Image 1 (cartoon, helix red, strand yellow):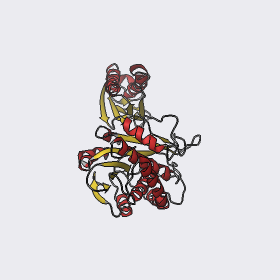
Image 2: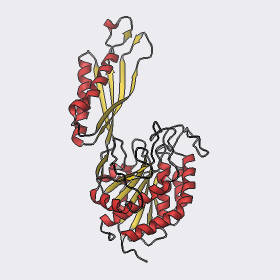
Image 3: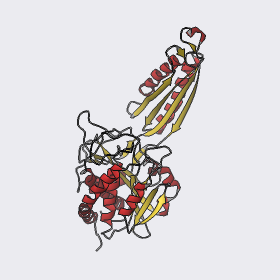
Image 4: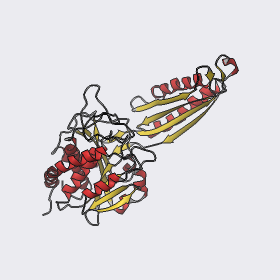
Length: 395
């Protein structure tokens, strides 16, 4: 049997996924119970490979692996993450983690959905290969995606497009968002260390107090987005950590802060890097102090390929409800490193959220098991969309 159209392949994949959903739910709960931090994914990949017997696998990015279904020729890649977060779980479910780590970003959902899709695909004659990219270190720096690219995985397997799906509580439950263009921001971190002259808290005139200087820098940073960036460009500057002093009556010799910059435009990114340095340096100089500024570039902007989005949305509309309001955020994902290499698509699978309910990276975030089915169907639609957009299957 060969598939003559995208609709026929999609229907067959969807039916085959149904068969594997009970096992995927059991796998999700098992993986949720044993999360592993980025760079220490040891048992997780072994457990996943055991579920994918019959597929050729290879180690990638240290602790990850790729699983290919199909012989030589072009492939459409599907990507999932392996790692959890250093969060103590507070969900209270019987299958909660108790090792100090947690799948609080839905990676357990993504992995089990990927397995369901690949196992379903094993039962069908595919028009081109599918490559499952089980990527480590999404939650840490350095991330795993650049290593996957650097190792030539995409080139070696002739990957023509790559697709991922991420759970998102800010999208309505059971709905999938697949949008053109920028959907996630570039994410950089900065650190400012102010050096003054410490001394006794009763004699401030004999010191150069770094704390007021640091406070003025914090306030100055809050004005950057509103006064230096086009208000039509989503941008965030957040100071998340401040450290200074150790006693009430001692003026310290140094004070520091750390923060994050999220931008959706490369020119804005460069502007903010320069302005952070200016604000810190000038604030310190005006008070007789000095400032060291360190900026570490993280993930680039994540842009979805228009042709891949169009083809995938057509496929998605046959399987799940599409979001009526586009979802874009200043969140980031190292999936963005694939976007400059091959046509790429990151979708967001809605889990819904009660008022004041937990969001991603929260100790009580726990998508329901039925999210696996929606995520698996989104990945299947992305695979079919990839085939169509690359001319490997008639629409």
